[in-house]
Figure 1 (cartoon, helix red, strand yellow):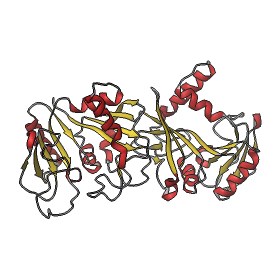
Figure 2 (cartoon, chains in turn cyan, brown; figure 1 turned 90 degrees about the vertical axis):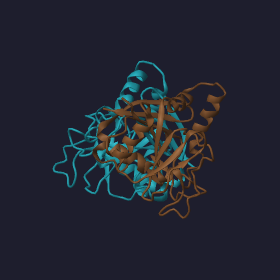
Figure 3 (cartoon, chains in turn red, purple; figure 1 turned 180 degrees about the horizontal axis):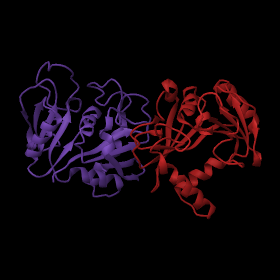
Figure 4 (tube, one colour; figure 1 turned 180 degrees about the vertical axis):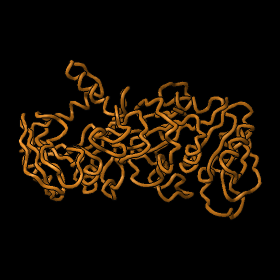
Length: 209
Length: 209
């Protein structure tokens, strides 16, 4: 059965997946700064043919993905109605997804076809319906769930996530958006399958109980 | 200068330092169960002359400590006024502190002299005053701050902790008492000095910025 997977979700030691006041210049909020550096370093190592714990996790995140789901905050800094529809994501003309991407938003707009096989769809449907569309688009492959934290929480709360990988990095953010919050009883369905340290991060993998 | 140090504070991946409903049969709350197993295993290894990351952290926790501070929850399961004063801690007649131990409580009682050099003092003074007494008792050595989370938070909030070691263990607790909560701006004074993984835990060391 195809699965819904979260990968490379970076959190601080005190549990924040984003800092406060997310905006254009600070997509992941104040203080988040270099928190993804472990991942960029792993991507460079991967490109250079090097191995390591971080590289293995980044490699896994790319395997067998056929569609992507994300929240609007991961797609862009706007809140509320779109002022114009020229924004097509943070990633330039050829985004790294190369598949259908379903963006949760209350403010619908037409799908946007990008270079390289990425198409952004905007939906205000419930998580179950969006996931069903994503599985259909993935045609037998798995679906990757991106951030932000609020979107991941919605899917965890509904028990829809099959596997979640977080990278805990040696930083204190002190405030922002907590990953393990607003989960209700949904989180009871999960357990820690793996906790592995690298010099850059402690990798945690959650699976269903 | 002598320091105030926290060691071996065990937290779940989702950030809980204790489960809900702490009581006599469940001193650290429901679900906490075997979360300290990494530490007991390290103590056994230390006794057997074996090494390793966990052993190093446990060894460090024993070095140069001259007094101890803890919250009432760490001392015992009672809440409110003492029903009787026969309770002398979880640790039997010869507790593992072997120095003066200052227990924060709103309900004072006479000091209790135990075997092996441990004396429990009960105090309702502010953290600054208790710390001053503890430093005096420690006579030039460091002071160790035990749990629970609420007590550690008080000292962090006041910026009085010099060093804090937590062990993140591969468990989800889902509910209980969060370590990184109620910290106000106090936590801004700290940074992560170390994040090191062992097969049993990810060790985090916080120090002042």
